[in-house]
Image 1 (cartoon, rainbow, N blue to C red):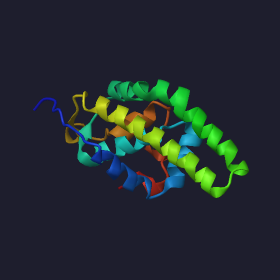
Image 2 (image 1 turned 45 degrees about the vertical axis):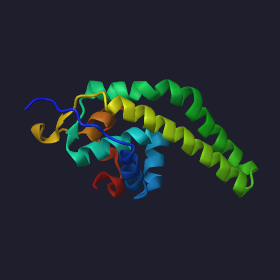
Image 3 (image 1 turned 135 degrees about the vertical axis):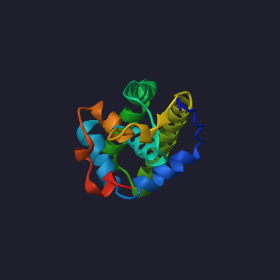
Image 4 (image 1 turned 180 degrees about the horizontal axis):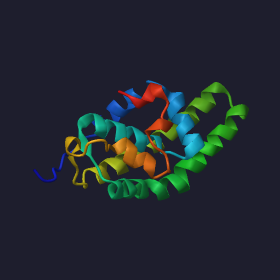
Length: 153
């Protein structure tokens, strides 16, 4: 059977959020140490779980589609929030986190639109290859870089 086009809804991000809650620090460490995009990594893990394979070129497209937004808006804001943390009351800092979450949701919407344009394939037809591996390979990493707490669902 050829490619299939599965339509994903915003619900996919609720599933990703649950996966993130398993070990948030592990995801943030990958983000800080290797510049891995947490939303993309969670999406890769979710698509693996659903048995839906996206090829390496499609992962490059997914990364590229949010790169400008994240480079110009989200990452500078995240850096500012981290610097401001020492100078803000807890409630003020929480407001900054809330704004960052709004920005993360925008990234998720952009990614959702893009992933719904992609023709994926059943994961089972490609033994030993998965989305998490494809995505991490964009950074010269592989699944051994994932802490055990988040490497298996």
